[in-house]
Image: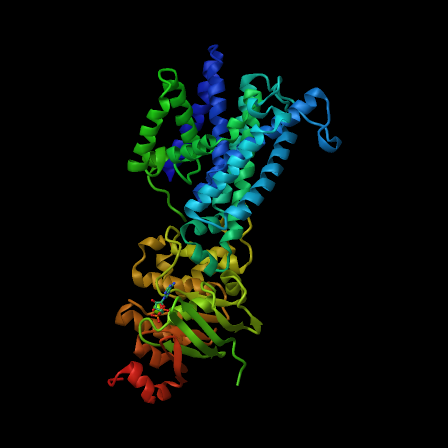
Length: 323
Length: 249
Ligand SMILES: Nc1ncnc2c1ncn2[C@@H]1O[C@H](COP(=O)(O)OP(=O)(O)O)[C@@H](O)[C@H]1O
Ligand SMILES: [Mg+2]
């Protein structure tokens, strides 16, 4: 336990110090890299609530990542063009409002998807969540109003009161702030009554029902919360690139989030952070050398699954223990 | 005579051509231990599953504490006060013994949708959970993950969890299974005291325990109840002796 805490602290310090230092040395590119890490980690913290704590292998979280992205993009474009959306509602460039809308939209979508898919389990659950995400993907592609296949660009990053979001370090700080909040939330959730029921649902759902708690209700709540967190990450991702496209909704994106968690450590607080760091650095280091960098990612994933079930964190800190 | 707390009328359940439960009627009255005995494969566990809600009967009615529970989810039946233990221990293996009991307590308090408070320092859970573990003499093992408990300790943990749900009736499926003579004896005297808290429908193979505990015994053979009566009546019943007890009993 103490070793895991030490690992988490060291990783946090590195993730803050490295981009700040390189930025001072006039290498702003690393700030973008760190921002990518923060956003992917945030998305994966969301998924980790469903997958890690609840054992719900959602292969459709790209739907929420992408929905969050489109919420940011659509609101921003309407605000920029000063044309109201449906029913006369105006767009907005205010990040906090965008995040709130993303949270509500993703929670509603997750409620519908979850209410249907959580009636199944195992490989059927994986396939149904995938099917829903694919529906969202094709819907975005075939909806010309917001760019269709080509995606949707917006020219200026959205605003946050009192912060110049165009400065890369400032935007990174916003992303880290939200990532930090999500980690605090995950930690509280894990040790709460709800978290206890959710983890029991993963270990033994009959037992959970036999103490008087319906596994379906607990899982549905977890799925909704999980989707909302991933949706906020999607909004940030859109802001990072000033661009949203259907690729955010693709099954590869869903897979990437799962891979991040497995790399880092399933159900571990910092699993998504460690996984995202490793993933983005690998992509950066190997992606420059060979287009086939995913081959090496595959090798590493194989190694983790075969020899280090606890992911990177498991290698450093051993198995987790419950109180 | 007191109203039965649990009442089954004409329950039937088939698995394909196999009639695992065949027109079973049975009740459980306040303060009693009602033992359900019968050879392996007679359908005892299947009957418990239907009462608890893990299996749906094909026909028949199920009443508990004055209401029809046939349409209720297992979890809702538990919250009404119908606690059960499994023939094969079924606990949350990664959780400590304490945390398994705490889970039952939070369900009983109706408070599983709390997202922030840390349960490890929540004395409204930890203290009553320790008290329940102490009752089954597992207090020293409270912090041990359930996966590392011995078979016998896990049987006791099941009973502790059932106790923690605040039951009005117990369904115990072979609680003595694999406990050894010492363990069975200790558990028998524990269950003897438990009947005052809530009546027990007890499925058990250990005849010594059944004859020591039961106020009434029902004998199930091929899914049918062939006799119900006091221990002495059942011991003397010729059909029961032929079908089940053998001559030595
Ligand atoms: N889910 C099931 N599907 C098919 N047959 C089953 C199922 N569960 C139990 N059975 C059969 O029903 C009969 C009764 O089983 P069970 O209730 O476990 O008996 P007991 O607990 O009295 O030993 C057995 O023949 C068993 O093989
Ligand atoms: Mg049985």
